Length: 411
Image 1: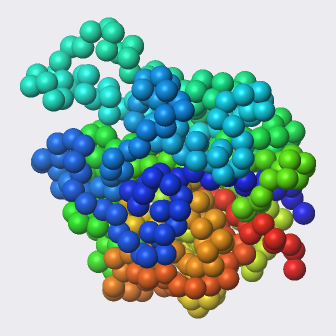
Image 2 (image 1 turned 90 degrees about the horizontal axis):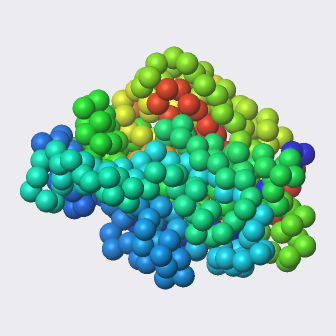
Image 3 (image 1 turned 60 degrees about the vertical axis):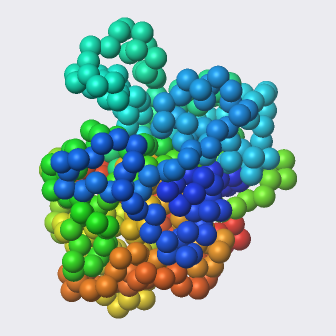
């Protein structure tokens, strides 16, 4: 059986709340955390809505590191603090010194850069900021800033493969654990809402004016969100030696590059299916072992049909036969871009721990082209031992993660 990594701590910040418990509770309740964006002016856009993190708490123990951080990094610091506390590891100190850090993202420093360059809030349009303003905006990655705040000295990596960034960061961390490069890795991702991404996705015409409706015949597109998730991954031996509680196991990761189109996926789903098949093979499991799929599920017309086809390629008649539940939690917390893969991995752990299936919000009219079980609108009790999480990004950067319950063993 393939070597797994023990997940011993989880931190998660989304529009559903500032910690992973509130996230899991919101999933169980099927609560849609989408409203008008307040943090910047959205006039003139097709959609002015998003899944925004309100009243971001402070992490006092980081002190100056948090005060100087951009919004994406503050989200990551909050998630990391929660994850380390649950894992029983310190925020600082020698025991964290050799830990690795691997984070995905795509908008670090962007909101702050927009304020400086556009003169936002100053009454000046297209300001020419002083050099000191550019220096104040973090030029390093969120991963670098997290490493500095935690005073770690292990490997640090920042991945940006668009919407599969943090899924691939978790895959990279799994490789570090397997190779012996690290015994402990903090892995995940963070992204914040900003003007550039809202304008970009609106210009592509893939943003819904009200809410996302994945796999629904009325779907009009995604709604953007923000957030962060950080998971503490450990080698099984390291977790066992220190008596850590194992929350779940990361069994496998697959990634593939379609090389098809900058924004459109391969319509037959073959590229996405390849990533799923690679993840299953990497985990050493069969398609029949999977109990739940956390879909990429953006609610765009093309992506949802492609994903349904990809899943049918891999799971056969379990998809149109509705034997395998497939839901999109982006319907509740928005599309958090580079952070989405890690946040959705946490949704899989919530399903494993809580024995329920997260729902797809906004669902009402089935689409024959997406003939699957979307777990419509309300969570459903279920025994989940094995889940996969899909992340299919622009440019055909496809990724899939396999997450298993701590007690899972090959049947």
